[in-house]
Length: 239
Ligand code: UDP
Image (cartoon, rainbow, N blue to C red):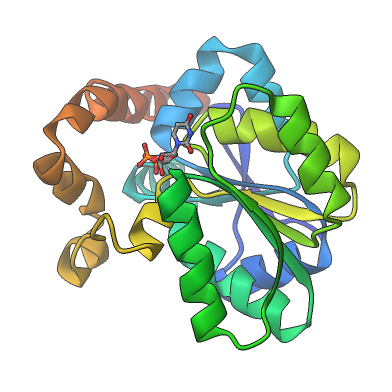
């Protein structure tokens, strides 16, 4: 399956449906990035991070910001929530008897996620897990690669997880790896996901800001700035 890409502010985003993205990630090892406006803004200021996104094997539009941006540019795209893609990948790799590893979140959180997965999926093959609070990247990278996992879920928050996966991918060229932000906290039940109504309206970010007001500074002015940039790109292109 060849990639069907849209470009937004210089970054390629795959236009797959949810099901296609799951299949693509299963059959094509490499780095899966769930991209959002904060990541694009960060990438515009950090060329090394921009390169990681450009080199990723799959980039899915996570959240309303990138969906809106792509629609402004004339692409009809549906957002793919990283947390849902992550869960579906677990199911797919489990069904195919593949090896799974998890890195990220607090020790008790990742342990609870593993416990929940073991309860939900009988004989799931979790070959390695570790919390996300470590100083020595190399040691964890070594341990993950020795596990020979087929799927590695990394929940360190962005951009940390993308840098980590980028290093890991050089050691594990046959593995699918995805950065999942705060998903382990939700799976462990320590953080509540926004109710469906917020999700459907694309307002999950608003719910998270209400629950955790310090997130406000992460989203503003990034989100409006991002939309302005996209509008400018569209305007300039059409001149
Ligand atoms: N985290 C981690 N190591 C760190 C910093 C953060 O494992 O050094 C974890 C943190 O415990 C949380 C996740 O990374 O589970 C980040 O969650 P956040 O909601 O900030 O990420 P987002 O989804 O907004 O990218």
